Length: 117
Image (cartoon, rainbow, N blue to C red; front, side):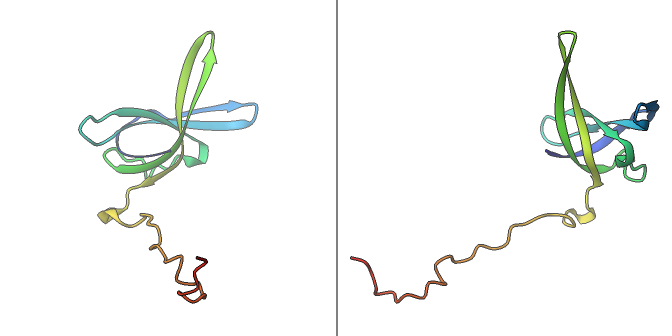
């Protein structure tokens, strides 16, 4: 999934050591645009944390996964970012557009008057 939002808060960086070595995690709070803006808490793990991109007030394109897990009869949901990029200046740098449609029948080499009926 993808989301474009404004970074409104950067929570403290968390670090630790686990059985697989050192880890770090950063929670960010972003706010969506629109008539009814929503705030979303997103976690970013490891080398995906980029301090240059994570500036309060910046517009971000965030690619993420949503995951839920159960613990002691309660469910917890995480929004985990796997790519965080700044929104392109001018609004058109990294946009994707489909190629123009092609005429699928123009390459038929049969004569036009050769109809089966």
